[in-house]
Length: 84
Image (cartoon, rainbow, N blue to C red; front, side, top):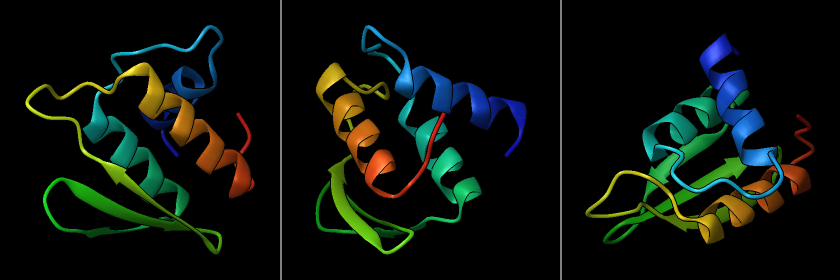
């Protein structure tokens, strides 16, 4: 992972929860961690990392995530064994 990916990971695990993380940055970080990302219907995105699977919704029309999505992503990463 490069510095930008590490910074995105730090933002996800930051307390208090930070909104406004750009979704493309999260996807790029996931790919760098070895995740498989596939398109679902509509704005759904299927993510598999370390045998853990989840479905997320891409934010639209804005490109930044809200706090709820960041909390869900944090939970997914913890279940997949990713630490900050």
